[in-house]
Amino acid sequence: MLQALLAERFKLVLRHEMKEMPVYALSIASGPKLTPAKEDEKKGSGVRGDPGGQILDRILWGTRASMANLAQALALPAVVDRPVVDHTGIAGEFNFQVKFAPVDNNAFGNTSSSSIFTALQEQLGLKLEATKAPLDVIVIDHAEKPDAN
Image (cartoon, rainbow, N blue to C red; front, side):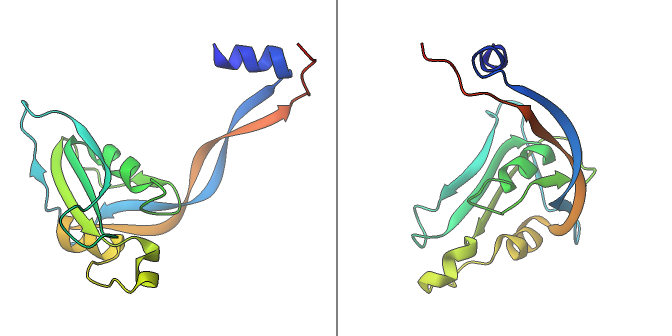
């Protein structure tokens, strides 16, 4: 519905295109250290500040989360600076928690937590590797200034 409105109002013409872009590949490092989830748990994943630790520490958590959910949570701006693709090949749902320091945390003198790259290896047995992969991007072919109402 929103696409139709934009097309009508702005004469917007767009298309999807696959483009090779920088990403992080989530893969197995030393062997996964994941706790299988129970069926009666609520699903969820995300990133939050650690209320019990240093003010600038973060916790990446998941409840009944798949590796695709983990990759999505890792791609949040509070964690890494580019998309993350799941190359683990691990199926199922897991509970996890990873404590890490944001990239800019050392600027404030906090070195109590590891970077997300180190924390993933130590706490979950997974790793992030910089690489390139084809991603779906939206290309705007045409747009016009709308007429006054």
